[in-house]
Image (cartoon, rainbow, N blue to C red):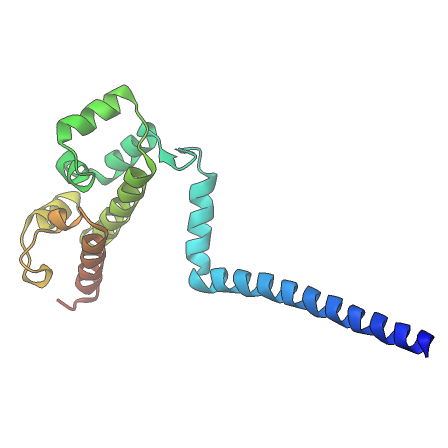
Length: 170
């Protein structure tokens, strides 16, 4: 009796260990699958490129990277300062002192950069884009797109409107 009982107990313990190991593997796989399902391959590639970029120190955007972005997009400094909720003079001083942007400012600047790049793809001219950003639009609740760049919600509205213009649905 004793050897059979002992053997049965060992068998039960082994099954429990295997079950626990399977659950651990399944939970890791589920988390990994959830992350990869949440983001497209293109988005994951973009995120990895941003993280690999030497323009970021931790989660801060350097002033030289911002200067490059601002120069490439050639848009009024007022749009950048408005999206950061600071005056153009303060932004200019920050650039002159080469003070890095904090994580929230970095996030906002990169979001505005995406909007402006999309706008350049749609309008193909910086002057046309800037004019569009400064005009009030009925589909945006009679708001100017540059004023909507002050919030994440507004950035989303402007991106949707650019998509409509690009596809001729406005």
